[in-house]
Image (cartoon, rainbow, N blue to C red; front, side):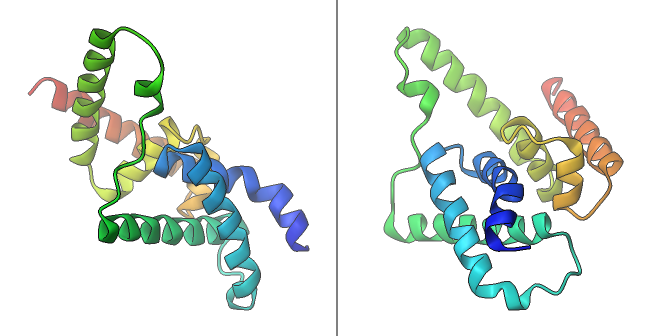
Amino acid sequence: MDIEQIYRRYGAIVFRYLMSLCHNVDLAEELTQETFCRAIYSVHKYDGSCKISTWLCQIAKHLWYQELDRRARKGTVPLPDAEMAETGAVEDQVVLRQEKMGLFRKIHGLNETEKEVVFLRLTGEMSFREIGEIFQRTENWARVTFYRAKQKLKGADSE
């Protein structure tokens, strides 16, 4: 399989995965391109011990972490919130922002695996099968992990 076939087959998966992490279309597109560039240069390191999609998402995750480190070093302003940029009533935007902040605080309290599964499912709109592939687990594992995380978030509501 050549890189063009790999891109056609896995490009959308990598893009959705990155969107779930960064929530920014332009940055996700840029990181997706960089993921495939890195894959070309490191294809000799791919040993077949995991699926190609998993390997690509691992590269993408490392690129995302590098981007976060770069932003932290430069003191760059966080990524813009697309919903807040849309026109609308100021009060609605403030309420929406507060609700989102509350939800993200609760999600932040989850363990790393649960956090990532929730983000992939909700913001990356990935299927449980795709999430399972990324983690090298089963579709059922992804469903159960998401369900348990959701239950923890509901439990946090009552506190």
